[in-house]
Each structure stands twice: as structure tokens, then as C-alpha cells.
Image (cartoon, rainbow, N blue to C red):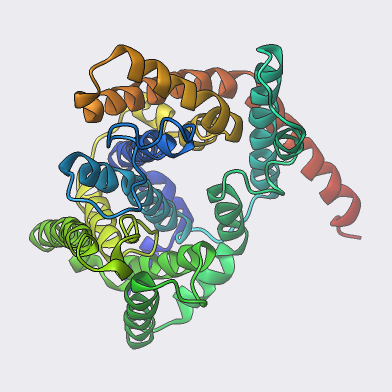
Length: 379
């Protein structure tokens, strides 16, 4: 009982956040960049898509090994989402305080990054179009980056979720976790059920992680079990992708299910993400450099996945690479592009954090403070 009370202590949480999990968050963001680098091929012009079997629509079943690898690598985005979500859930489930200035600051940071990209495109005389101008001025309303609104909602309601975690007993936690995994990560994973969406996936993952932290310490600390879970998840995902691709070339109803399994509610990807978190969480070390770049994670995500960049600039990068390099090595070329995007986005994110983000921090703190003084002050 004493152990559980200590694990729920916010103070303890801040003391135990070491660089191993922060490193995993960086890896998760890199996975997302890899995914977007391959998915970005889908924004190429129609006359280029399908020109030689490399730019083909990955949703179409194929036994081309290069395209199958591209399908698997494009699932790194969902894997990265789940890793980042599990890491965040682990720490948020130890704290029940919501900082409104954090929400306000994140909204402001996303807006500034979006508008900076718009200004960059307009100065570069890129034909943006009035619809993209409007979407760039209201990135959060139009959910240009779907992950951000889901994360903000999760952060805002996490004290209520923590209350559920705190009040639940082990039997209730097991029933909820098993039922949710079957319904949302198995049944809804096989077909697009009406009751499943990304926000619900976020909430379910949060509760499962919270229950594991409270009741599943032995499982989380068991290296063999988590290595086995990692292998099972990896073999299961790769196996079901290859099987679907093969059957899709034979059965018409499966012909357009090439990327069907690349979802955030994948039981295989969730198993991989959870196992990776538990294995990394076993390692203890501290690094200011890793912790600093890990703090840039959301900035990196928003910068490299900006609407204007992915749809108006990135396609020209692919064409430039295609015309100058041997496309037989497309996997290495796109992976190299992902590395360049990750490094470049990290440097831009660091610059943003040390300049504009400092201003949004002061402004958010000031606005919240004035609001609290005016409307929440005690008589």
C-alpha cells in the first residue's frame, strides 16, 4: 500500500523522470518523421504517381517487396503516436493538476508555427490558395495537426481520469482493460467501427497505462515478458501486412487494404509501444542534452508536418530527388530525407523555443494570472 501511494505522488513523478523515457520520446518523434516522409509520396502530382511502381498507391495490394516495406515503415507514425502517448500517460497519471497556461501556450505555439510557414510560402511566391491561408490562420480549429487537439483534450481531462484510476480496484481495472483492448484494439482494428476514433483511443490508452502503473508493476518490470511482447507485436504486425498484401492480389475485396492495418488502435503496434516503454523505463541515466531535445518533441512534430510544407513544398523535394538519384534505392533515399527533416526540424524547434516560445510562455502566464485574479480570487 505504501508503494502505491508513493507511485501516485506528483513530487515523486518529477524526481523519477529520467532520460531513458525522454530518449524514447525522441525516437517516437523520429518514427513519426519517417512515416510522414513515406506518406508524403501520396501528395505527388498524378502524372508522377505510378510512373515506375515506386510511387504507386500503397493502399493497393502488391507483392512488390519495396512497396511492402514502405507500408510497414509508414506505420511508424502510428507506432510513434502510441509511444509518445504512453510516455505522456505514465507521467500525467501521477499528477492531477491542470495548468491552463500550458494549454494556452501550446495553442499559441501551434498558431505561430503555422503562420510562420504561411509567411515563408508567401515570401517564396508559392501559390498557397485562399483555403490554405484560412487553415493556416486557424490551425487548431481546422485540426491541421490532429494529434495536438487530442492531446490538449486528454491533458484537460486527465485529473478526472486519474480519479477513476485511483478509485478503481484491480478487478475493475482488468475488466476495463481487457474489454477495451478487445473492442477497440481488436474488433474496431479489423474494421472501422462507428464507436472508435483517435480521441477515444487516447483516453483508453491513458486509463490502461494508469492501471498498469498502479497494479502492473511486476509486468512492467519483467524484461523477458516485455521482450516477448515486443517480438509478438512486431511479428504479428509484419505478418498481417504481408498476408493482407498477398491475399489482396488474389481476392478483390482485399485489393485496396494495403494500409488497412496502419492505425493508432492497432493491438500489434500498441504491444510494441508498451513493451518499448517498459524496457526503456528499466534503464536509468540522466542527460541534459537528451532532456532538452525531448522537450522539443511537439515543436518538431508541428514544424515538419505543417500543412503547407507537406502539400506544397515536400512534393517538389521528392521530384528533385527522383530526377537526380537512383530510385532503386528509394528506401535509403527517403530514410535519408527523414533524417534531414528530423535534424532540420529539431534545430528550428530549438530556435523557436529560445525566441518566440519564451514570449508565448510569458504571455500565457500573464493572461492566466490576470484571469485568476479577476474571476477566481477569493473574497
